[in-house]
Each structure stands twice: as C-alpha cells, then as structure tokens.
Amino acid sequence: MDLAIASEEFESQFWFIDLRFTFSPHPAEIDPVLRTQIEQKINDVLLRDGLSGCYKYLHEIVLTRKILELRKQAMDLSRGRWIEGLKVEQLNRAVSIQYWVDRYAKGSKSWILLGVHSGKPKNGRPHPRDTSRLFIRWFRDGKEVVDEDVPVGRLVYACSYSRELPKWSLS
Image (cartoon, helix red, strand yellow):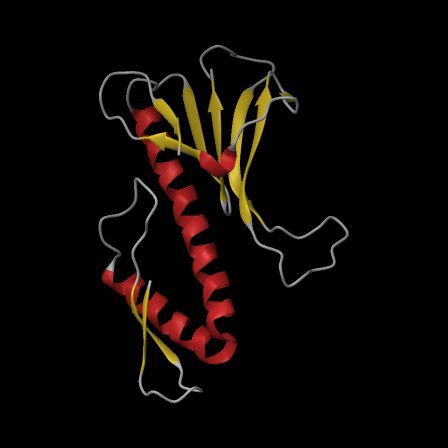
C-alpha cells in the first residue's frame, strides 16, 4: 500500500494512494468501483484510527480476498476435471469444499472448511492485539480430523489450469 501526507506537519493525515496484493495468485487489477470504495474507507479509517486502524481494515480485506480466490479455484476444479467429485459452497467469510461427492450417495461426507477466524479468545473478551487469521477444519467421513497439522497460514493452491491434479504448495 502506498500512502502520502499533504504537509510536513507531524499531525498531518496520511492519504491513500495505491493498493497491491502481494499474495499469489491475486487479481491483476481491482475493480474501479471497489477501488473507489476502498480508497474512501481507508482515508476515513486513517483519519479516525490512524495507521493501526488502516492495518486492521486492510488485513480483513486481504483475508477475505484470499478466501474468494480459494473459492474461485475450487469452483474451477468443480466445473472441470472434478465435476462429479467436488461441491463448493460459499459461506459468509468461508468456503466449504465437499470432496468425494460421487463416492458417497448417502451417508457420511468429507469436506474442508476454509475461512476467516476473528482471532478473539474463547472467553469473548477482545484484546487490542487480537488479529483475525485464516483457519481450516477438515472433516473426513463425517468426523473432524484433529490430529493432522495442516499449515493453513502457508497453504496456497498453486493454480494449475492443465489436466493435471491440483498442486498444493507451501509458501
């Protein structure tokens, strides 16, 4: 993100200039209407809450954008080679990907749930340092798999539009 200030006064407000996503894959350009809305909101947040508020706002946008990208990729897979094997469902700030759909006509299902966790502790008391993050929950045959360590913070689907199986990379 690029910011500017209008004067050299210490109390001068920062102003939004530009935003670029650094994760991959990411949208080449931000829709102009969305960009205008983001710009207005960032400038308002900078005025009201300063850089820390701006960080929190942008952090939420990036996490949501990552979930949308994962959803898009899962939808591409479900419409292509895995047309009978995947079912993708968009949730609020999450995506559910049911797999082996053709394997189970009735009975237990298997799915992965990827989403944004608020970062708030279970006791419900918010802390200024609480930061939202991506989460993953894995269900196999209707039961949650809790013993496997899935590094969701580094899990990125390496986009492959070929006829190969999808490639997952850690980066």
